[in-house]
Image 1 (cartoon, protein in one colour):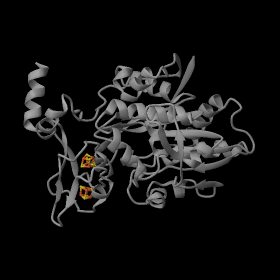
Image 2 (cartoon, rainbow, N blue to C red):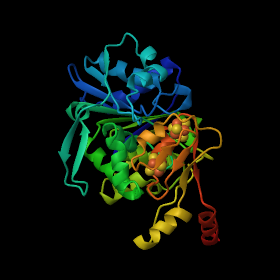
Image 3 (tube, helix red, strand yellow):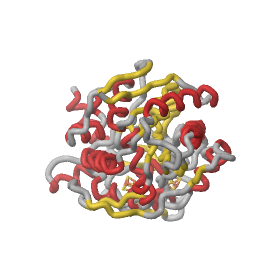
Image 4 (cartoon, rainbow, N blue to C red):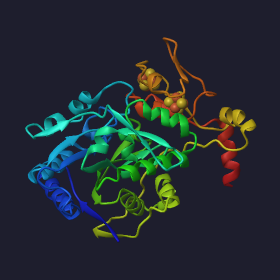
Length: 369
Ligand code: SF4
Ligand code: SF4
């Protein structure tokens, strides 16, 4: 039976440190000792201040690092962001990590090198960050957020950051239209890395159209931990009062026979009225009909009037090369667009929204009657 530990917590450092120490103390069954090389993998999606809830809170990362250092182990803190350019140092600064962890003997290092792993899965070869593969212990320090494509990004999804740089949108390109397949990729990645400890920062969570600037921060006051990321994600679904297999990654884990029985240690308060993201429609039907459906039925990214600053971040990240900047506005090529929503995720100005074509809306209404 896997345990999921839940603490009601806050970003008051004394309290937070006690809670993190208690969770890690319970999960560290002799894994971390003097000399152990520990990798902390936070959510460093983009460079936002902690109150935007886009990244794992710096004090959570600090408390984890202090726990590990006190045992005489070494700490490396690494991720590969969602940006097409290198913004690692900007994330450390804007995200508050530089200040919060000042004076601690930790190494900040973005994932740069990948190693090709030959997997027995349908994905065959997957390139994964070398530093993640080399770590003796991985502490997966995820954020509780919504995700317009995967519904939620929790402990399993957090590991997508171990795919380095632009290899991330390339995976979206390969499997992005098929969310269940993408979830299977994430679970496969999890099975390869198997972080021994998983912590979820749900103190200031995100609801609405996450995981980037379009999401809305929401205080849940929850800190969770487990030795098993899938189990942790299952428990979050219970807390948010949703069927666990509604979450694509849980469904994929179920298919791969990775669901385990679990027990809750601590108090789990049911969260009421959590705002889930706008559902992006999936393409379906025979290939000949896809062009029509893609154009008239499928949701699509669209600029919010007057919000775009033409910064080109979305143009650079788009794996399908479906966005052009003509100097005055962006032009989306919806025939090329694979609806991965990397553009919405990356946009720093809340300038991309998910638009549902009128015909799609009408048809959805007819079917929901
Ligand atoms: S336009 Fe946006 S949603 Fe479409 S493929 Fe490019 S990044 Fe993905
Ligand atoms: S939509 Fe956002 S990311 Fe794309 S160019 Fe405009 S401001 Fe930049």
